[in-house]
Amino acid sequence: MHNTTIAAIATSLGTSGISIIKLSGCEAFAICDRLFVCPGGFLSKAPNTITYGKIVDPATGETVDKVLVSKMQAPRTYTGEDVVEINCHGGMLVTRRVLQLVLNAGALPAEPGEFTKRAFMNNKMDLLEAEATMDLIGAKADKAAKVAIQQMEGALSKELGQLADSLANVCAKIDLSTDFDELDSFDYGPQNVARELGPVREGLKRLAGTFDSGRKIRDGLLVVICGRPNAGKSSLLNRMLGEERAIVTDIPGTTRDTVEEAISLGGYMVRFVDTAGLRQGDSLDPVEKIGIDRAYAKMESADMIIYMIDMCGDLDKQVQEAQEMCQKYGENTPMVIVANKVDMCGEEEAIKLLNNIQGAQLTSITLSALNGLGLDKLQDVILKQCATEDDLMGQGILVNERQKQLVQRAIAHLDRAVIAGNAGIPLDVLYTEISSGVQALNELTGRYIDMEAIDKMFSSYCVGK
Image (cartoon, rainbow, N blue to C red; front, side):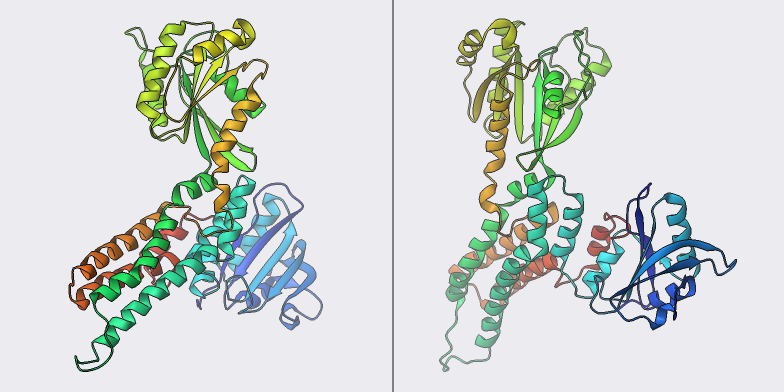
């Protein structure tokens, strides 16, 4: 329990019906009592109640606002400490004045994520649940919110806890075996250890295999739209968004930089990136060259690439470039070749052209970005790529780089332990590797505390949560 009391605005600043100033700490009730005027006084109010009254500036006696104040007593609160929430009228002026009075009365400004950090330190949640709290706040699509709720309810924590306990049990058996001499009946050797580690390794490898899907659900599927100038890339982006986000003209090279926008598609967040037209030549100015370089850089990290062919342009050259794209990226990244402007050239000719392009993970679609013809087919292809993640719903999955790295570290330690166990290496060597694996899993959930890493993690959270 901390001996300081913190305060922050817990709602977004701006014009609204209500704003909330939150306090947490051992002096939360006393600080509120210095400002809040109500019948009988705030300290007399029972826990878990809401009281109507007014915030008064102690220095001037001026009424700042009429408010509702929630009183929540430790340990049955979000942070595990005494918590007060002042519900005042929305608006930047009133909200900031109330917060300043709270700070003048003895509270300290909360650091980013400090309320959730205190909840973790007071054993109200583990690190995975704390991360999921911020994921839920930042969720931009239904599936991301659903996964965050699962994590907050302990889906991943429970699975990792069971795996860590299994490893701890193996360590206990190794400890026990050292207490018996060779005349005793407890026979537990290196091969036994290697055999018992098998199911734990499989469980961790299953979790490691969920990271790519978890990342896509949490951060969104990154879809890069590329092609030659005037192929219709910006028109497609605008059509997907349902608004004029990217500038569209007949002038080649209008798009000079990447333009990224996200939409919710079938419950998943999809991040579309419109890129500069791909072309070569000495006549390109430096700005356009930079834009083209950025386009290629985005393709390297894409989850899906849409290559657009202008059916009214140089078809032989575009087919050649599309084929090169498939060879360069298609082995690792799903690709969609879109023959655009079929409203002008005819769909049969477009289909014939697409049949000449071959590549792994390749899908071909005819489209008119101008009038939306074929857009539903493209959306289905994108959703099919997303829907491969549906089987993971309800399970523990990894959603960020911290989780991935720690699980991989645990797997590496167990891999070495299994190899050593099968080779008959002494138990003390195996014990060291297994203990390191347990520590990696405990870092994930926060059973093992690395305060520097924890401070860094919570510093990226929003103030007031």
